Image (cartoon, rainbow, N blue to C red; front, side):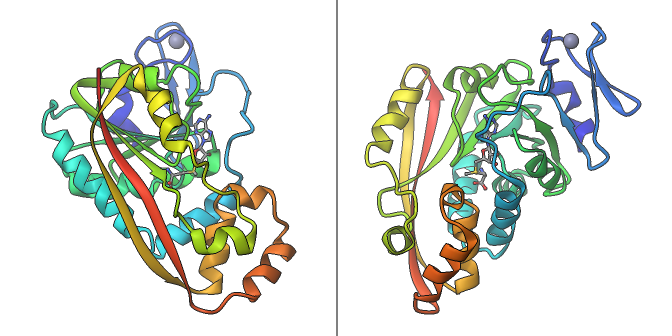
Length: 281
Ligand SMILES: C[S@@+](CC[C@H](N)C(=O)[O-])C[C@H]1O[C@@H](n2cnc3c(N)ncnc32)[C@H](O)[C@@H]1O
Ligand SMILES: [Zn+2]
């Protein structure tokens, strides 16, 4: 709930602490932000929305696909890494999920860490609304990963970044001493059976280098693991998988349906990701 994490938040305009005053979060400098009826708060100053936000359709497809449990081996790996890494930090620090989408992974991590609260961050209001209901210890916030994040310095035991934009300097600022950043990125074989036939956006082969470049200044890698497994997917699940990702922006629903119809059913699809655990330098 938002009330649980309010003491960890910071005003996006002036950086002062925020308090819940009726249906708004406000700082002592009178900057105030309405809490939505659905339980999240939009802490974007002004009305700007970067075009990188996932659409409502993408978020709904993602929630439905993740709800099928097909990616639970990834969630298990993230939760196990979170359990190991969180021991080194104070109990009152939280788990921040940057680009949390519907909050599936954060909820799984909070199940594994019964004493922690979580903050879900996303630029999409649809995502924030879903994440607000994904777990009773989640406070959900609309904000932009590329701006100063509306969270107090040192408030986080863990920052999760799962298939989402990374702002290394801000993630480092949020982490308490001993805290860790957990990053999940797709590996080269990810969804390989679908990439060619469906014309999906393929994984950049230099992604690992770019990941290290983007984090290298602020973080050093502590551990990394490859998680790879096969999923027997129905056509409906393949459709969700495509519609939740970046390829949904490039294929019309008709094109997608036609290409999926030509696949065997079930079709075996490989999931292949890298889970990295990083500490601040
Ligand atoms: C590929 S999805 C991953 C969602 C979630 N981590 C998961 O794996 O289920 C990327 C998410 O990042 C969000 N996003 C994109 N640009 C963002 C930004 N500048 N600030 C915050 N969130 C952003 C999108 O709205 C989307 O929910
Ligand atoms: Zn303020």
